[in-house]
Structures are given as C-alpha cells and as structure tokens.
Length: 582
Ligand code: DON
Image (tube, rainbow, N blue to C red; front, side):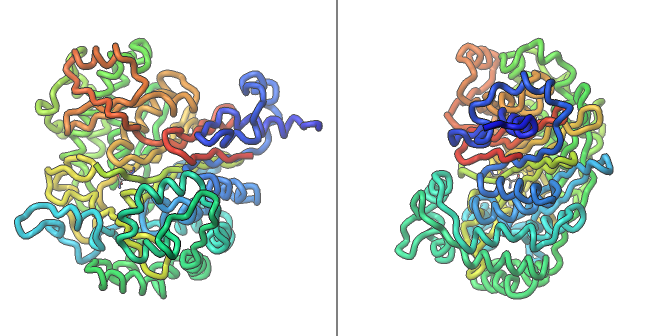
C-alpha cells in the first residue's frame, strides 16, 4: 500500500515514543526507519500534528481525538484530565487538585492555573495532633479530615473556559462514555487496584466501586463500569462547576463529611476558586525555564538548583559521573533545606521567592559546595536568603498543531488518596491535608521537613512539590515535562531538564537515564539502578550516604518540540504509560 509523505511524517513523529507496553506509543510508527534520516527531507511538509503523553492509554487517546476533532491543547488537556478520573483512579481524579501550566502560542505567553486543594474553614493548626501532642498519622493520611477542598473540577473548567475552544459537553463526553459503558481492565489498572486492595476494602464505598460484588478484584480483560462516576461527570457537563460544588454532588460530599467526622462544608465547596498565577522564570544557559510558583515549591527549587549548577561545566564532568552527581546532590541539599524553612502558600505566608531564585543567591550558595566532599546535612542550615507509603500523583503533557502546550500535574496525594469514596458519586477524596506541616519543623509523609509557612490554616493551600515545567529556546517551547513522586518530583524534573539541556539527550534517553535524589533530610542519597558501582564507590568515599534500595524515582511524561517536530516519551519506570499522537 502506498504511504503518502505526510502520513509517513506523522508516523515518524512518534518514533521516539517509548512505553513499557510493547509497541506502546509508537504503534503507528513501528518498524519505520529512524527519524533523523527523514527529518530534514520532510520538514517543509510537516503540516499539523498533536500529541498527548500520559500515564494511561485510553485517556491519552481521548486527548488526541479531541485535537483531531478541532480542539486545542487545552481542550485536550481538560478531556484527558476528566478521562483519567475514570481510567486511572489512583491519581486521576475529581476529588483532588493540581497545577496546569499552559503555553499560549498566539499570545507568546505562559500562564499557570493553580487548582490546589484548600484547607476547609474548620481546619486548625493542631488538627492532626493526639491528646499527647503527637502527630496522629492515621488521621492525617486516611481519615475524612485528610481531605482538602477539591480543586480539580473548578481548575479544569476554568482552563476550558479561559483557554479552550470546545464546550463542556464535548470535552466531558468521552469520559462519561467510558464510565458508563465501561472500560477493559488493563494489566496496569489491575495491578494498581490490587496493590491497594487491602486499604480500599476498608471503606465500604471504595470496596463497592473498585471490586466485584463478592469483593474480588476485576481481572485483566474484565469490563469495569462506573455508573455513579458517569452521573457525576454528567452533572458537571450540564451544570459546570455548580454540578460538583453545588447540587446533589456537594450534598453527598457534605453528608459523607458529617458521617465521617470530616471538615468540608457546603460553604467550603461553594467558595472554592482556582487561581491564575504568573509562572516563575529562570535561565539556564540559552534556555528559559517556565515553572510552577507557590503554593508549589517545585518551580522555586528547580530554578534555584539550575542557578547553582550553571556555575559548573557539568557536561565536562560527564553525565552521571561521580563529580556530576556530587554537585547535583549538594545543590539538592541546599535547595531542600531552604524549602524546609521558607516555603508555603504565598497567599498566607511571606515567601522570599525572588530572593531564592536570584542568581546572586545561587552564587553565594555555590561557595558552600566543596568540590569533592559531601557536606553532612546536619551542617547545612536553610540559607539566609535575605541577607514509606508508596504514593501517587500524575502528570501528562499535551502539544497541539498550533504550538500550544499544556503541562499538567494533578493528584489525590497518595495513590487513591484517603481511600475514602463519597457514596453515590464514584470518586475518592484526597488526603492533601497531609502536605501541611502537622507540626512545623517535623517531617511529613515524604520525609520532608516543613516550616511554619506551611502550618495548617483555614483556606490555605498545602505546600506542594508538583512541578509542571516548560522550557523555551529562542522564545519557543522546546521541552515540557512533569512527574509524580512527592518530594522526588523536584529532583526528577531537574534531572530530566539537565539531561536534555546540558547533556543534549533526546527526550527518551533523558527520561530513561538513572536518577538520584537527596532532600537534605534525611541525609541519604537515593540512587536508582544503572549508576555504576565505581561511581557509587567514589560518591561514598566523598562522604555521601548512598542508598541503592532498589526503588525507582519519579515517572516523567514529556514532549520535546524541535523544528516543528514532536518527540514524546513516557517513563518506563511504571506500567501503562502512553504516547498518543497523529
Ligand atoms: O503536592 C505534592 O507535592 C504531593 N501531594 C504530591 C504527591 C505525589 O506526587 C505522590 N506521588 N507519587
């Protein structure tokens, strides 16, 4: 059969796509010749293309279908976000929150939609302390009080209203259909539910939602229907935010809160609004970094660490050499130490953002780094700037043919959040209140020490590490990425950016390369498999407490945009990821 050059080009765009399902992402491209040979020849003919890279196939394909039908990247991102609430319940959500970073091609600008959850009005600083003043982790992680006021529905609808082109009904239709008609349980979905089965079964509504009537798990290949969730999505399609924050859905949330000792009231729901914020900006060599501002700590520290690191010739040290990993680790320690002292919701606390991302501050911090000796965390204090549980979040990235790009990270916090479902609605409650400092200067679920700026206050947003990021080159989007991983998000995104910007890796190699993580406290350098033994030995000899523990770090979903080409890479560290495009 004859293949036209345009079809061929579209197919080739996907060649760099990788996924852990055989052939995933590169389905249409399988068996083609490497892209580089064709790029130059066909470049003038590249007309229109679009891509969604995300943690789950059906939702990614829904995003591309929306763009094929004439929608832009925001329409696709909103449709994908609602679809993931159906297909990827561990982190896709209606009951959580997140951050959406958008590049608007026509206006040559970027904007950030903060739809992070908020503490209910009834929240208090000591709400997770028991009678002895100790933190009650069960209350913090797995109770009705764990839930912040959800932001996802308001955030996605705000994005659609401001920057999308389609109707609510159009972008919600695929998610509603999937929930109503059912989806075929994949290996990944089966695995995700099974790995949390014990706790999910503790909540009667979660048990009803995620398991068969006899309590057994859906098998791979079974059809899983979610009629309650379809009805909730339908309410949103018909009534907009009011269909979630008012009416029957809100009544059900409030009833569940009252039954379970939770704090969210009808008034909290009605008052929830997303906030459009100005993204943070930094430079790394010829690249411009557009990043997420507070109440996420991600952008501040990614820019801070890049500022510190650009004082070194990292490329000359060599990728993942001991010298490089040493400098990377020391920069991480300095940044995470600052996070512990200064970061919180800027609507409530003074956060010295400008000072933290000032290159002059980075120059001072660089002097604290010894060239071949690890500084123990105990000797690192947050800088004077003015002078356990397995967890889940999810990220997806979208690019459309008009040059718009969306980088979105959203979450319930832990995998399946609080594991508490709201009866009759089909969705789970987040446990984002655990991202506050239950007691300032103590460690949270991610071992992150957090300071007074992140103490619990009514109406405040808990400090996040979510880091949807866009890198510009010559003023145009060049790379968009993000990751789950709690505290590990920041170091994961940093390394993906450095792999691409400093080490000139293609996006697939940048995603696959072994990562490290250090967050100041505990004083432990986590290293993925694949870093050589002699490198680890050198790091130990410099004084690093290296922990190879076997865990993987982060799960990026990235698109690189080069010469009008889109290169997508889903991270193979977890199953189910997908690159969809045309
Ligand atoms: O906002 C945060 O930083 C956390 N709630 C994110 C949680 C997360 O990434 C868990 N995923 N692995």
